[in-house]
Image (cartoon, rainbow, N blue to C red; front, side, top):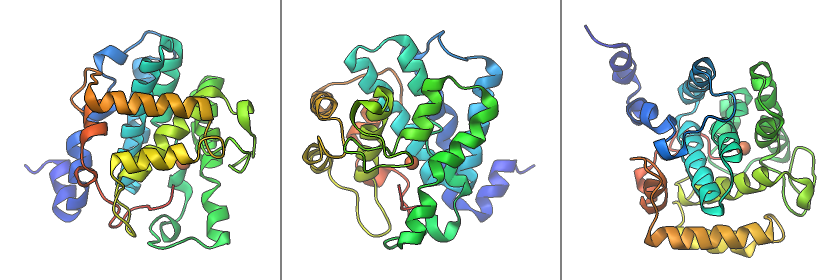
Length: 258
Ligand SMILES: [Fe+2]
């Protein structure tokens, strides 16, 4: 008897990569597992279910979420952060773009620049995400990552427009990983940047978009990681950092807008 997944793939083959990769990709590597945080099996199952919901709507964003989670947690390990902070990143970064479920396909899939009105709509996705996860009783730090991952160092971000160290540290960290992954992956209107070019672009915006001190550490982390990095997972930092953009699902029919 044909499986449910095979039945879906027979008419929507573009979802193959997601269904093939997600179970391993969404599980924390052994080295990142922690007893901290709301790590009950029901909580983990809920996270998995929400991620699959996102993937059913927008496979690109689901894969992006997995990659950014891995990159952010690997960077946190590099920084020597504690298990509580790593657990916060692991639980929340995976859901950081969940609110895009509430943005229309006409905007998510638009292959060109957004109008100001469309831009205003897409900037609501952190608020929508926070509303979706409200019943989960996430920690304040976890909720912050979902709500504040588009805040910018100079105060030009959204939804609150807070600046500098008003932005929680883990949100500043997430925004770096988020931006890097967005740059190295293909968009409908451009190819992904080479890793070195993406990093230079991020460094050029240190002190404007990104925390300047943390950007320096992120650059050092990435450059050292290009030589050697291991976080103990088949789809961990090595895959995130070394894969060519073409290995990742492209946004041929998925959301181009961060
Ligand atoms: Fe986002």
